[in-house]
Amino acid sequence: MYISQLLTRAVQTKGGSVATICAGREHTYAEFAERVQRFAGALRGLGITEGERVAILAHNSDRYLEFYYATPWAGGVFVPVNTRLAVPEFAYWLNDSGSEILLVDDNFAGVVPELRKLVPELREVIYIGDGETPADMLNYEELVAKNDPVPDAGRGFDDLAGLFYTGGTTGVSKGVMLSHTNFITNTLNAMPCFSFEEDARWLHVAPMFHIADGAAVFGATMGLGVHVFIPGFTPKGTMEAVQEYRITNTLLVPTMVNMVVNDPDIAKYDMSSLKDIIYGASPMPEAVIRKALEVLPNTGFTHAYGQTECAPLSTFTGPEFHVLEGPNAGRFKSAGRAAYACEVRIFDENDEEVPYGTVGEVCVRGANVMLGYWNKPEQTAEALRGGWMHSGDGGYMDEQGFVYIVDRVKDMIISGGENVYSAEVENAVYQHPAVAECAVIGIPHETWGEQVHAVVRLHEGQEATEEAIIEFSHTLIAGFKCPRSVAFVSDPLPLSGAGKILKTELRKPYWADQEKQVS
Image (cartoon, rainbow, N blue to C red; front, side, top):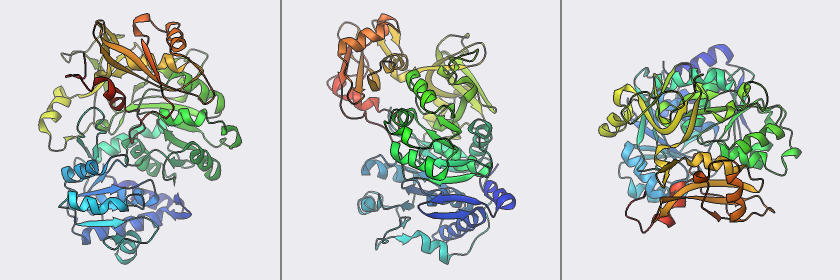
């Protein structure tokens, strides 16, 4: 149960095979391991001792992967920083974690002078880009070249391995403490459902700072596959990479899947190598899955549900349930059944298990569950009360153990005394053929408390009125759940760094003059 073992085993069994492909660079597993050991030596030379934090602020790359292995090899704790934040938020994560060394690429080298002012304890900044190294930074490749490989520090099991900060979309970001055991347990959970096999070519397109891609950071190595990197997501860039590198597996959040399968040029690309797409982080509208099955008929889809605090996998629904006919039809609407080393139950407000079919809070127990929140003992105790991780997600379980997520507990809309789960409404609105994106939120209403409101972006060249969207919703869901108002936007909806729609931003104009954010 320690991260370094993944790499040593890969070298023992497949040292001469390609491990990483990035920006014209290729490294075998033996070369990958040596680079990790050399950079670990550099970190020790810079004063990193057992348990000290090292942060990274960069887009996806092979050097990012090396950081994930070299930091624990040196005895440190990795802290990936969300690239979508503002500079003061970068500074908060660095200060809160106590990170004294930071890695940056070309995209973020320009914010370092301001960060140095805001983060007094920041000792060294290491440049991992391909341009000219700024004068006040150390060069990553030079550090790798001039330092000798060092032995593994030997940290493992319940030792802290990484701090992953929550997105802060529902409050102040919290540092989730994940141990070596958490990561290895999650990797073992992910191996069968993510198809991490020796012939796999995994595309890192989801942001590597996010725990969802973290499953592949370790899983593709455990499976002895090939890591392929592109800096970040665009539909065209993703399709080009699949075609050029014959990608077999990747992870996309639902907003990414939606953009790819509805891209007008998808038929121009050879996507035939793509065996599996794993998706998660937010609910997948049924209309998007149906489109995906149509345009990618040879690709299997797996819904992976979890959260950072669970490292992250808790449940999954495999390709055999992403079908439109037969006994398994419709199962893709669920988040699946418990992962192999997880226990999942649905609790009420008193932490009592509810009957099948009853909505409650999804709770998880297992060796994948976090150690706690960094320097937040009260919030840790609340989240882990009774030995269960309380997810904050509302859902129910059927008699076969399939979990259905209805909404974030905090996102539930209470209108006229009725509970309305925005995910259910969004699923209905998405089925309108003109709708490209949709987010459903509660806005203030003097009589009902909250009003169901949909924010919609239409497909280019398509038209729909507010009345048409509302009437269409009435054909699919109960009247009290349907939007009472619709706002149309021309720009894509705001996303977090993990690709989730930022409903907090959409709510702000409506709740700005309210004392509370609920009614």
